[in-house]
Amino acid sequence: MTRNTMKVAVFAGDGIGPEIMAEALRVLDALNLQGLELTEGLVGGAAYRAKGHPLPPETLEIAKASDCILFGSVGDFSLDNLERPLRPEQAILGLRKEMKLFANMRPAKVYKGLEHMSSLKPEVAEKIDLLIVREANGDVYFGNKGIRVLPDGRRQGFDDMSYAEDEVRRVAHTAFRTAMGRRKKLCSIDKANVLDTSQLWREVIIETSKEYPDVELSHMYVDNAAMQLVKDPGQFDTIVTGNMFGDILSDQASMCVGSIGLLASATMAEGTYGLYEPIHGSAPDIAGKGIANPMAQILSTAMMLRHSFALEAEAKRIEAAVEKALADGVMGGDLGGKAGTREIGDAVLARL
Ligand code: IPM
Ligand code: MG
Image (cartoon, rainbow, N blue to C red):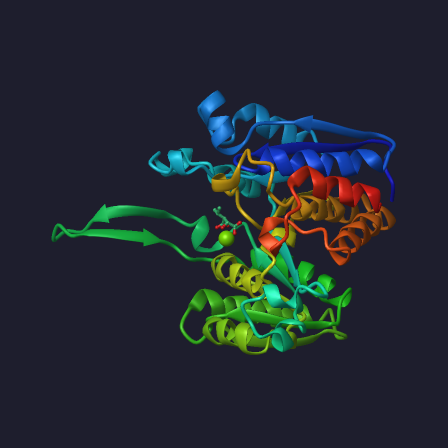
């Protein structure tokens, strides 16, 4: 499926977001794709400063009028004292909710020659090639929450954890389909020994598995999964888990890889609508210095071409160019190298 127009919402965000987005857009531009239309919008702290809200209505309109979102990163320490609905992170949570982006996919793979970047022993790290499918629209993130005063006067914080079966089923289908395209192994991570939410999660995963007889399904409790991820990450192919467990385990997986400046992610809605972003944050400490590594942003663009526009060949071209640049020793400070943002962009462009 190729389209006549490909409308991309470009939300660069805060910190290093705009610098690394600029390099990703240069790479996109070099591909000369017919019908590509980019529309920029403000998100995060940048949007709060200009419009008083991290996800202003005009930005949401751009998202709705587009086929996908290319996202930079949001976060700004100087705004951390705002009440939570106005903080920069609300841009990403708001987009997940409003655009029904329910399947967050975070591949973690160690690049050859970069095994030493991992926090694990190189011989353990080199085996990492996994993908976490994290549910992103439900769970304790979006439940009823608050701080209330009990009859005896004590304050009590609460956040309801819940999953409806259809919420589990749709992410289960995404996960099984993803596993089919990989090594056909799916591990569902939950806490079914304690939580009823997890009990239903597990039942629905098992029901859904009947439609995917070729996929080998296993289950693991989240505490054990945290251990197994550092002990023997090579045992995992595709993982599916809820919003909260996935938040934690995906950061852990990225450190097992080490080179967080290389990890891209996609958060998909039903169909081909998706939001593509690097896994790393807005890194305000190095913003504006021209030293941020744009590779994860560039690789997010490749994921966008693959998942939203079915442009597999173009996606591979970008990924190969990044891999070639790394193999040739073009590395940013995050990988112990000296290459700056622009220089890395140039190096990838030269190898496209
Ligand atoms: C992530 C982030 C977000 C989350 C924050 C910024 C709200 O940690 O994308 O993993 O918790 O989902
Ligand atoms: Mg997180």
